[in-house]
Every structure is written in structure tokens, then in C-alpha cells.
Amino acid sequence: MQSAEPADGRAVRVSTLELFFDLVFVFTVTQLTVLLADEPDAAGLVKVVLLLSVIWWMYDGYAWLTNALALDVLAHRLLLIGGMAGFLIMALAVPTTFEGGGVAFGVGYLVVVALHGGLYIKETSVGEARAMLGIAPYNLLAALLLLAGGFAGGETQWVLVVAAAVLFWCVPLLVSLEGFQISASHFVERHGLVVIVALGESIVVLGVGAGGAQVGLELALIALLGLALSTGLWWTYFGDEEHIEHAMLSTPLDERTRLAIHFGYLHVFLLLGIVLVAAGLKKAIAHPLDPLDDFTAVVLAAGTAVFVAADAALLRVLGLARSRARAASAVALLATIPLGLAVSAALQVAVLAAIVTAALAAGHWTRAAADDESLLH
View 1: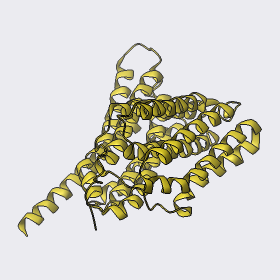
View 2: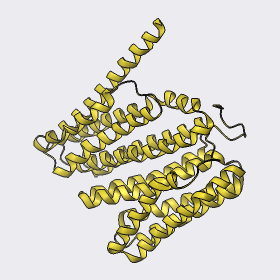
View 3: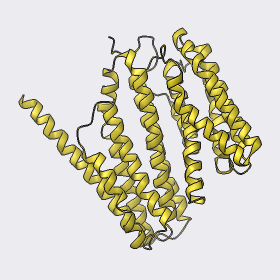
View 4: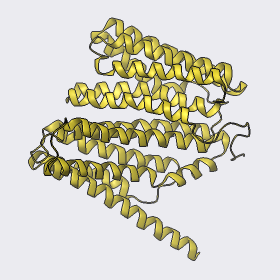
């Protein structure tokens, strides 16, 4: 079985246009953070999970599209920019999607789906176009559900948005993926870039949360601790970047598509973790030495735990799991909630960053020991 990259001349590295696309997409992640910070309750969290699910499905669809599409063609570039416009409309509508802005969100989503399906079917290989013909009706159905929900509002909208989100989690079980080809280097780099941009946006949100306040000891402390936590999350994901790419490259082409589906789905949880952490930091920065409210303490711990657990699952899916410390640290991260509730935001964030760092160190030592043992044999 083949394990090399597809020999069809497609690019194996991400273009600047794709990076530009990712910057627009990540605005939706920022808006989800704002939504959760403004609605710090269970309803706000459910909204974030539902909207992130449907938004990510089409973002990842565009990652697959640009993996297969020649981006040096002017028409392709212009249509991709049209997709960016659809994502921008969706992002602007995110905070009000369930409060009257659902029509705008649905229209933006319909544009994104139409351009994606059209480009895939008309401009990629025969095999990939045929595979996309099986998926496109489900994408269109979901877009129409979201649009109809925007018009209906109320409980009906909730039902229709849930239906669209559930549909996307089921699509790979309903259609054949035969015909898709994945350029591993491009695919891994594209997903890594969206993670790094999202982490960068979480720092921007931290600055927004400061609200132009004068920088004193308290503000500097929570900002630096927030940076330390984000750095730990960055290192958690990107410390294994080369191994991830090698694992994807080593996977035979006829198995790589199914692996890419799992790879993409796990990134939903990585981004959800970033959104939760960013929303928690945004709420905590105003009074870093005071105890936190229940919701903020929970989302800070849960967001970090979700990110770390998703990364551990990603490594396991790729056959790269070498240490149990990372998975075990997710439980320890949740145990920081009482620190935020009883003491302060600063202490909880500091302990979160310390746990993530300790898990990284344990993983490094485990890997070094395994490498030494392999050399001896």
C-alpha cells in the first residue's frame, strides 16, 4: 500500500491565502469566547458547543478543499475569498445567533456551503468530486436547517441547530469517503496553524478583558500567568508536531482519509478548550486576587483539561501515545477549581500552568528514556 504524498502536483505547504482564510475563521472563535464571557452559564456554554460544531465542520471542509485545490488559479482564489466573506458574516452573527441574528448566520453558512461544494465538485479530481457529491447534500441540508432556525427563532431554532450539529457528527457514518486524497504535510500544517492563531487570539481577548486599565502588579501578574498557561497549551500541541506529521505521512493513502476525519474532529475539542480558557481569563483579569465565581473557575479548569485530553487522544489516534502523564493531568487540572473558588484567579491559573508544564516534562523524560532504550537495542 502507498504511503507517499499524492503525486498530482498539489501544494504540500500552506499558502498565505489559506493563512488569511484562517485569520478570518478564527474571528468566529473570538466571537464564541465573547459570547461565553457575556453569557457565563449553561445556556451560553451549550450555544458555544453547538455553534463551534457547525462552524468547524465547514472550516475543516475548506481545509480539505485547499488540500485538493490549485490555489494559483485566479477564479479559485476569488471563490475562496467569497468563502471567507461567508465566515465573516457568520462570525459577526455569532453573539446574536439565538437572539435574532440567526438569519444572518444561516445566510453566511449557506454561502460557505455553496462555494465549498461547487469548488470541490467542479475543480478537484474526478474521485474527490464523486466523494464530495455524497457529502454535499448533507452540508446543504444543515445550512437550510440553520437558516430555517434563524427565521423560526425560539425553541424551534434550538431544535434545528441541534439537528444540524448532530448531522455533522454522523456524516462520516452515512457516506463513503473513498476518493478523497490527503496531502499529509499540508493537512497537519493547516490544522496546526489554526490552533496557533486561536491561541494568539486568546491572548488578544486577555488584553480586551483588561479594558485599558492601568498596568499594575495585579494586572501584570494575571497577564503573565495567562501567557504561561497559553504557552503550556502551545507546547502541549506543537511539541509533537514533527511526530504527528510523520505519523500521518506513514499512514497508507487508503487509510489516511479515515484518520484525517478523526484528526479533524479532535480539533473541535482543542478549539473548545481554547475558547473556555480565554473566556475564563477574560472574566478573571478584572480582579485577579479575588475568588472566582463558580462558572469562571469551572471553565478555566475544564477548558485546560479538555485541550490536554484532546491532545492526548490525538496522539493515541495517531499511535504516538508515549506517556500517561498528559492524560492523567486532565484530572489534576479539574482539581484546581476549589483554588479559584476559595482563593483567587491568579492562584488557579498559576497551578493550571504548573500542571501542564509538569505533564510536558514527564512526557519529555518518558520519550527520552524510550529513545535511549531503542538505541541500546
